[in-house]
Length: 203
Image 1 (cartoon, one colour):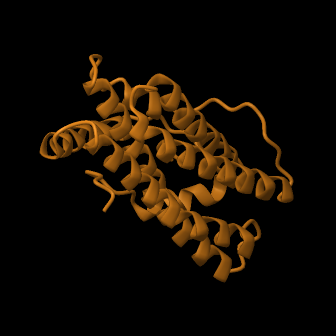
Image 2 (cartoon, one colour):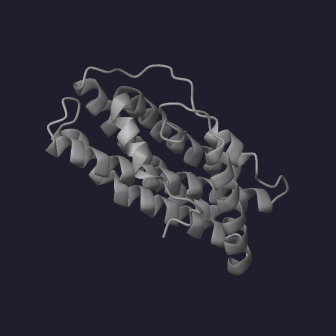
Image 3 (cartoon, one colour):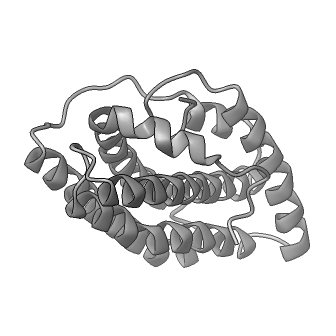
């Protein structure tokens, strides 16, 4: 269960097929940022020892995904480069409360929603890639299809891991209520995202 208030329409995946180079570059940056975020939370909350090991595990997996995406991108003639990010994550995190421990709970829940949206987008993209591969689309091959198929379960698991970490910091019912509020906020942020070839934007 991804706890999202809205789901991505198939049309997004079909449109993404025309921007695969940019989507792959953005994906690499997203994985790198996800690893950095997990490590940053370890340093921000050294007084929360129950967070340390799960966050370290998340960071390692995100870096592995960064490597996978970067290797595939290079195999397709692309290269890691600077890219203007979608404002999605910053605007989502702007909804966090500013006092502790509420800030920690909200940050973990926002991380969970980013992972959920990534999973949602990758599901839609994977379906579009499978259809395109079967139709012999010149820019789609088995390696690209297999990459996104392999990442789906991990993204969903990361979403659940962040939700469970947030639940360790407060009353479960209250955390779940706050998750629903932030999911509504996430849907509004995504709906207002600019038109960009990014995982967390409109196309």
